[in-house]
Image (cartoon, rainbow, N blue to C red; front, side):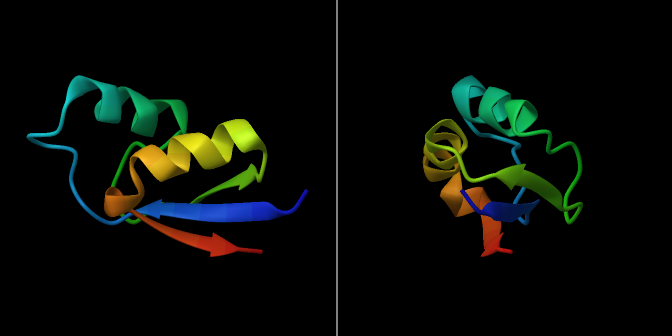
Length: 59
């Protein structure tokens, strides 16, 4: 499995609690602070749920 670098580029304000909790589970705390994860099916599923708030790059 490869790695992905995810960066939050849009705010979580006025988003459903599930989306806020998903961002927190991915380790994203502030805007424009990248986080690297293994590209497991679980992580890719979480990214899919909040992809409109993220920038995703494969490394």
